[in-house]
Length: 499
Image 1 (cartoon, one colour):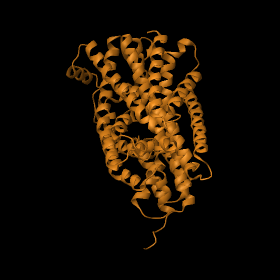
Image 2 (tube, one colour):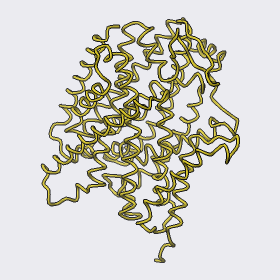
Image 3 (cartoon, one colour):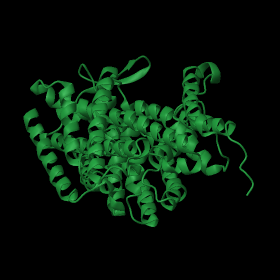
Image 4 (cartoon, rainbow, N blue to C red):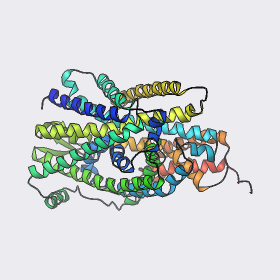
């Protein structure tokens, strides 16, 4: 399909986003930017957060991983649901009781100012690394599918996309994102359903027949029962629960949308609804992954072994993993499906990138700089500072996307989850210690504990064969990291004073 035609559809889509942003950002202020004036509709937030939770990485990495990991990702999704229930009924009541704008203010009230700054700093690091990895994946697909035909360099493509994101989030922030995420999630899910429907129709298969074909190829395995494997179901479920608790419940980007809802009960409905919807959507993505490999076989695709791992080839091109969906959708499907794929892909891109830049701006301004406490500045000065930080994070995103381009990992979802295990672990330890104990800590030593835990985890991960033999540590490294942080905080704490 003509890259120019694909590009024109992207422009039209973006113009629609700008129109939505213009209507929703009128009369916005700093409170609108940070927490949407605490007046967001819970149903819109729940629906829009599907796009934020999934992102472009889920859109291409989850289907692409089916050949080597079957439906193992479903095990993690069960853990996700457990995590959402804990967020709804354990974390959210605390955040609403304290009337927080930034969730890291909880650490200040519970442990001290240094702990508060440490938590916010780890969020900024975590979200920057994770969001830029997600952004890189989609930018790279757009670059290879469209922009390279115009001889546009990768760095310029990234700048243009970041500029597009800035244009519609610059004024309204969360107030705008709640609405744009709803539009983008609709487009993404519509694209997913249409692609599934087209492949079933093209292959003349029903759902039952397609599942039978996947079973014959070993794609449909869900439960992995070998305790030594990193795919062991208990490991995956526990890891999934803690990933959700940390990457959603202890993440300012995700929580600022939840606490923008006026009532706690509505915010809880949002989170629980999100958990069950995601369960269904992930199943659909896994089903799509199996269908894509079946479709790939119908156009001449086949597997070869490379270093003990199955590699899917179409002709001389490696078409498995993250490349599977883009290659098949753009080169082997009708033009209309190619357009739908591109629109769905950028719809998956924008919610994860726009929310991240907005949340990082909010956290830096509120948590690190203390913007709301600056009584010597009027609203205009605060807004100007916030906008400069917004631009600054866009520049940081550009830098990290270029670094990921240099690294060029074949499966970005594994990169993101590994990064999360190191950077979200201290947040898990901080919040857990605060909520499960009443012991005061030596506030000045908190940063050192939070730095030591991931360093120890790195050496454990590096030497796990020597330490554990055939037992593999996977995503549960996040739990180990949080536990080490918890133990460290326990060491630097003392018994609470008697009332």
